[in-house]
Length: 449
Image (cartoon, rainbow, N blue to C red; front, side, top):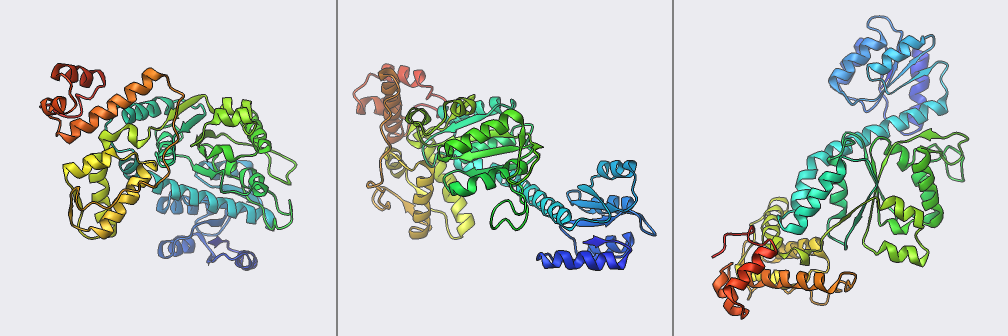
C-alpha cells in the first residue's frame, strides 16, 4: 500500500512496483489508508509522514494496532532526525528521504517483505514445534531424555552446536527445539541444506548480492546470514560445504559482519550457528574435506541423536502416536498393533530410524486401515534396506552394555514385562535379571511383575 497525499508520487510509485510484479493499492490520506487496510490488508506499507488530517506517525500507530508485525517504510522530503527516531521507536521498518531512489526503495520493500515472510514462518514454526517434537522426538527412554536435557542446557548459551546422528533420527527437529528454547526464539530460524545448493550459488545464497554483481543478478538479494540476523542459522549436512566457503563462514563468525557480493561495504550480523551431519566429521577432517579450524568452531557443544535401535523401548508409544496422527491427517480409522507385532517391530534394526518407521506406518494406514495388526497379518519389514554401518568407535564394554540393554528390552516386552517368565526364557536367575534391569535404568519404564 502506498500512502501519500500527492497524486503524482502515488502514480509514479504504483507504476514502479507494478512493473516489479507487486499488487498495489493507494491511499491519499491516513484516514483512507486505515479504512482500506481494514478491508484489504497489505503485506507492506510505504507511508508519507506529512499529510493533511492524521499525519504519518499517527497512521503508523493505527496500522500497527491492526497488525503489529506489519513492515512500514516511512518517507518524507523534509523530516528531522527527531521525526525519524520517533518513527523507528513506533515500529517503522525503515525511513527514506525524498526524492526517492527507485533502486533503494525496491531493495527496502523486498527486504521488508522477506522479513515479514520469515516472521510468519517463525510463528508457524512455533505453532508446529510441539507437534514435530511429539512426532519425531517422542519417548521417555534414557537416551532420548538425555538428549532433551542436553538441548535445554545448551540452549541457554550462545555457542555453536553440532548435532550428529544417522539419517532420520530427528536432527532438524532437535535444531528447531534448540532455537525455540534459546533467547533467540523470537528471531528467525533459517535453514541451509549444504548438499542441495550448487557450489557456484553457495556464496550468493549465504552472503547475498547487489544488483549487477554477476550475470543474472537483476536485483539485490539478502543472504541467509542477513536473514538469520538475531536468530539461528542451521546448516544441515554441513560436510557438503566447500573448503573456500568454510573459510568465509569462519570469517563471518569471527568478524560478526557479512559483505554481499558486489558491495564495497559490510554489515553487522549476529547469528547462532547450528550444524548437523550424518557422517563422521573427524574422518572428513582427516581426509581434508573439512577444515580443522571449522570443525573445532562447530564442535563447541555436540548433541548426538540416538538411533531408533538404541531406544527400542520408545517404539510402542511411537507406533501409537504415529497411528493416531495418520488417522487424523489422512482420514480413516486408526490401525492398532498387538503386543506380539510391536515386539517384532522392536526386533527390526530400523536403518532409516524414525523416518523409516513413519513410512512403514503410512503403508500400514493405507493398506490395513482400521485393522488390528498382529504378527500374522503384518506388512513385511524392509529387510533389504541398507543396514547401518557398524560403529566400532566405542569400547568393548560400552558395546556389550548396549547389546545387553536392547536384548533385555526385547524379551521383557515379549513377556509383557513379567520378570519371572523373562528370566526363564533367557536362562537367567530372576535376581540377576532384577539387578540388570536396575543397572540399565529400565525399572522406570513400567511396573515390573
